[in-house]
Amino acid sequence: MYETNYHRASSVADAAATFAKGAESKFLAGGQTLLPVMKQRLASPSDVIDLSKVQEMIGIEVSGDTVTIKAATPHYDVAQSDAVQKAIPALAKLASMIGDPAVRYRGTIGGSLANNDPAADYPAAVLALGATVKTNKRSIAAEDFFKGLFSTALEDGEIITQVAFPVPAKAGYAKMRHPASRFALTGVFVAKTKSGDVRVAATGASQSGVMRVAPIEQALKANWAASALDAVTIPASGLLADIHGSADYRANLVKVMGQRAVTAAG
Amino acid sequence: MSTVKLTVNGKAVSVEVEDRTLLVHLLRENLNLTGTHVGCDTSQCGACVVHVDGRAVKSCTMLAGQAAGSNVTTIEGLAKGDELHPMQAAFRDNHGLQCGYCTPGMIMSAVDIVHRHGGKLDEETVRHELEGNICRCTGYHNIVKAVLDAAGRMKVAQAAE
Image (cartoon, rainbow over all chains, first blue to last red; front, side, top):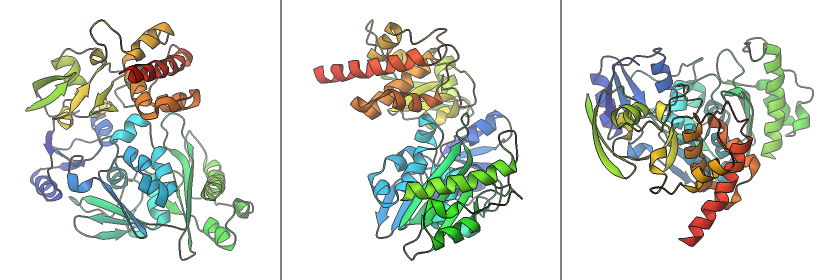
């Protein structure tokens, strides 16, 4: 790892001010991606600003029809939260499937979203549930937040402070885990909103990162059942192809994971 | 350089380190606590697992500065004098190690697993929960046996307290 300067932020305002002072600052949340990348010398920030102890960024609130997860809340706490398990069980389940136990103790929802790895789990939930990403500057709708591989609408120095999820009528998540990395070879999150709309998002599948899956949404709107997807075909164009699976394989996985997610949602 | 103050195995320490220092290097190189191992250095293998404020984390994927003010327990902090921690004893009794390189991380993760699951631990859960720890010798079989054995011993020890 190249030399860097470590700062522990005491508040969101302090983090933003410290960030602005560095030549090439980076925010550090759980560090489960950033630190390995720094060790590989693929990132060499002049300053890292640690958000993981910023109290106003930690915690979970459920009020009415909204689950709000503050950005520095670790995956473990989301997975274990009684409130999340009750309001959006699929979201707690998703958090429990990220990485391994040690990673879940450190990794955070804000860090995952800001990084926007094309095979990360949280982006699928944020997009399918139509969540709102709140930053120290504004609120960003899920549709406007994800901008392709490792790219988001965040401006330089902008900090995700919390994510607000509308509570759906039903939701489910299923993923085919890469057995070594435990990232999603493909993961699909299905949600039926309280107004009856159906939103489906797939991660790990597309070359452009997390995506909505229109054919599955249409089929589930007509009939919310795993069997409703039997006749659906997902086009392979634009899907990822690598040593772990071809685009055709991933196209089929989108359908199969979609079916399993519907079954999980009930 | 920064001064990092933390508690390690119950002892308050103050260490002068470069900001890029990883927690595992502070433990091994500054405090000579070489029981915590660096295996892969890519957060895959779990040989570096220690407890930070009661949570089993990979100390190769945490800056020393992030642990400032925290309570850290390493493999050296588990035994009470000459008396092995029940998890350590169970690993010995069940032949839960061969070369021993992964063992400190396995044991620290396993203690955390038992703390979280208590009496509800079964073989499937142990295998699933140990997925962040890699062993290239044992095929995991005796490690799983050791963790289940220790879970029973820790329950008995807790009941006796």
